[in-house]
Picture 1 (cartoon, rainbow, N blue to C red):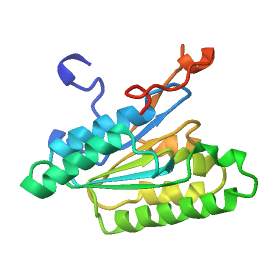
Picture 2: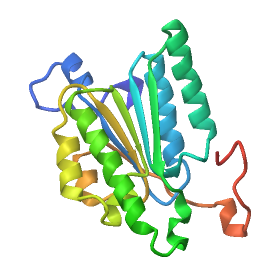
Picture 3: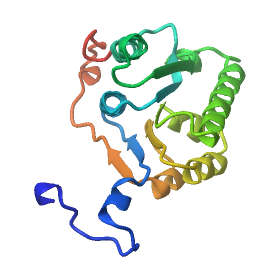
Length: 204
């Protein structure tokens, strides 16, 4: 793709400008590291463009304040103070990855995921944000907490120019099918494989 030019030109009758303004649905999936990191990098670009950003974390707990959350919320505060960049709203609705170790805890987490998705769907309907980061959405889908068909239809039929990035392993085929961009992170090596725990500044 030399000089940013597409290899193929779509026969959809749209002008180059019209095609450039099509809404993006980006899926970052795969077993490797970096899915959420890439999504947060996209959010930084969106903030610079002055976009309204809604971040929904379906698994990560709100008790765990990560570097990306602190940074983006600081940028959201800067927008409120000076008007620079765009607004940022952050919702960490999950209970963390340790839910699998707590017998009987799953129904509450599933309910929280459904409530979070209902909020996302309602915001998409009224075009609340220009960018939605749906972090680890794939897990409620593959665990059966959310209906894949309903989620896919809502994302596919969203109105206006609303961009969405979804992260998580094992993205369902139906979601991959409607996405405009799919990146699969492939793990070659990871410190976890040798028993090393996550590091501040690297994992969070």
